[in-house]
Amino acid sequence: MTTTLIGGLGIFLLGMKYMSQGLQSIAGASLRRLIGAVTNNRILATLVGFLVTVLVQSSSVTTVMTVGFVNGGLMSLTQAIGVIMGANIGTTSTGLILVLKIGKYGLPILGVSSLVYLFSKNEKLRYTALATMGVGMVFFGLELMKEACEFLEDVPEFRLWFQHFKANSFIGLYQCMFVGCILTMIVQSSSATLAITLSAASAGLIPFETAAALVLGENIGTTVTALLASIGTTTNARRAAYFHFLFNIGGVLWVSTIFFWYVKFIPWLIDVDVTEVIMVGDTPTYPSTALAIAATHSVFNIVNTLVFLPFAGKIATLLTRVVKDKPQEIAHLKSLDVRILETPALAINQSRAEVIKMGVICDEMAQILYRILSQKTPDPQDVEKLFQHEEALDQMQDEITSYITHLLAMDLTQDVISKGRCQLRMADEYESISDYLQRIAKFRLKLNKQGRAFDDAHNSSLLELLTMVEKQLNHVTTAYQQSHTDVVSATIRSGTEIKHKVKTLQREHLDYLSSEKVDPYINVSYTSTLNALRRVRDHVINLAEALAGEK
Image (cartoon, rainbow, N blue to C red; front, side, top):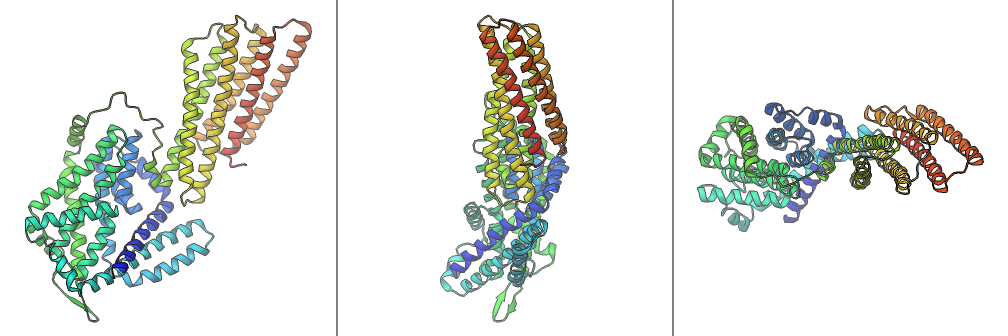
């Protein structure tokens, strides 16, 4: 029966994962809108945290994701505090689902939905089936754990061991809370430990008071996930994780002071008798106890949020004072954080922001290059900035590639996969463009160092060509920002004009070489610059094709 208990727990955890994954895939657009709706209004932020947690069915995912957003500078500490409090209320929905008396339907639900998932060609239907399959696994796993606990209830050794954990005194209360905390830290899921608690209480292994104490401990244990996620993050992200810990442990401390009144209040509130026994065949069960445990969890988190909500701003100020900023702390690639990979629909949107940023930087490099080519003596600040941009784009491409590669290794919808592939290709094209723009600047700086320069006619022709290329690049980047994919034909037209312009300039330069004596270094620099601008034009066309989904 111990193996049945472990097997049931494994099926339950896998069901939670599939349910969360399916719901996220179905509600991807809703998740993006919800996160975008977060403001400094603590009530609205709390509501968003609640809704997101209901959608993903995991407060740990929501809090870890929130730490990731704060780490990237996409969410303020005050906003994060509201979301975290809402997540704690949202997680109570799992407990309420678990008390539904449909455990015996878990296996049929799992069987039917798995067939739909395996044989359906409709992507939305497949992910709906995946979420439903997760629900079936959750209830089937819960049923297995209940059966194991019912067997253990008849074993004298187990009954004697469980009697050591009774919340009939403050010492017993803190012992039970400690067990609940440790168990949640090991399993890394408060929903799973809540399911174990419900199973044990329904089988009569533990009384309601002990189960309530375990639930309080589980609320402390779940904060460890966010604390672990905050390791190596920015100071603000650590503050958000610390708030989650303080919020839960503060709530547990004040509830524990009135615990023995609280465990009498909950059955009175929902009007149930936690000692009521119902025989299922020859097996006694305590169904009312399961409902009371779910209510204990829900009331605790709701009341705790109401207590902390008015002080959210002051707590944020206190955390800012206590947890000091690191000197010269810079969060590179703000939108990218591995913690957000738990929610692919949001993760792909965040990487998109960085690809857009690469495009904007490339466009700025083209403008800086124009100033460098326009001046007889280039401004050192412009030169330094252009080279810094090129280095930044190299690093950005590496990080975006790593991030999206990790994302594509997950089970994703076709839409997310297509966007990920597009972003990988666009990041590579933007990095290549930056290399050519830097190369052109090096040609010019080398000439200046040798005391050489283009004549006005040649320099003007290069500036005119660069303007055409910059305009083409800006058009594609703007289209990506505005989610316009129909850019290929316009980009190819402008590319044809640029190609024609390059050929014309090459022909004119050859005629010039026939009639005038030209310094070999100037000749090489001029033709190399023309070729580099033509290559930039080719990469911009590649960008347009990637944006349009063409191979």
